Amino acid sequence: MADRIKFLGTAGARFVMIKQLRSSAGTWLTLEDKNLLLDPGPGTLVRCARSRPPLDPTKLDAIILSHQHIDHANDVNIMIEAMTTGGFSKRGILFAPRSALKNDPIVLKYVRKYLDEIKILKQGSVYRLGKVRISTPLRHVHPVETYGIVFRTPKYVISFVTDTRFFPALIKKYKKSDLLVINVVRHDGKGGKRMDVDHLNLEDVKKLISGIKPKQAILTHFGYTMVRSKPWELAAEVQLETGVKTTAAGDGMEFDLEKQLL
Ligand SMILES: [Zn+2]
Image 1 (cartoon, protein in one colour):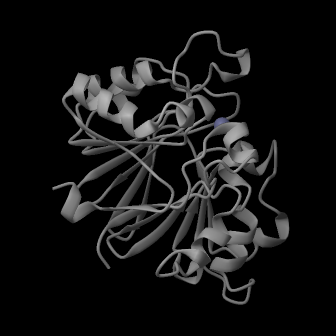
Image 2 (cartoon, rainbow, N blue to C red; image 1 turned 135 degrees about the vertical axis):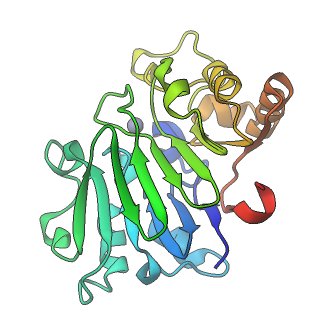
Image 3 (cartoon, rainbow, N blue to C red; image 1 turned 30 degrees about the horizontal axis):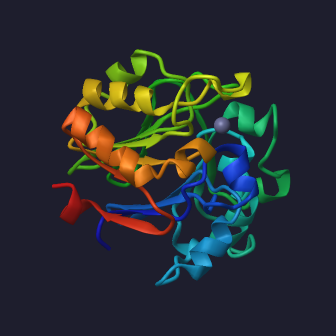
């Protein structure tokens, strides 16, 4: 199976999710014959089944939660059920911050038993899954314990800059990325409600991309101000200003790493 990323959903934050202006399903990655699901928000199981061809959750090797917020973790239980065929075949690994298991225990206790293993994400940790190296170089600034996720394969480095406020260490820690996938919730940083300050806006994204200089960038996890402002036009603006090829993800978009990145 070719290495690829499938964006089952591209909704970010509350309003776009609640109204389902965009799907809030997670992101499915196939890397070195491993299948990983990142941040299974509401609708992930449905979008897997409706995908063409369908994505089979019993083929998943791991589920990863960057944090416990519902737009990232709502479907974690049903996806563990699906991955393990309703608990009949004990398998798979769950990666999650401690906060998602303890503070807001969004992962039900009975489904935890279906898993082969639960790995607690920590700042600076490195995990291996076959030929894929999964690391969490730094804790993000977000209201709950949140990590960005870096996938390193023998061919490339893919960094998911998940929910966070902008801070300069992001540039340093994601510096070696070939592909940068960025959650950009807000169009501009001005006049927003206080609860929104711990998300990236378009100006932050430009700083990140200019500082990191990946081969390519993909924007996703759009809040209402982004959806309203036509993300594909904003991606073109980012590309023009940074010189880095930048795409706005759409629901169901598939990115073939071998064909589109190298
Ligand atoms: Zn969040």
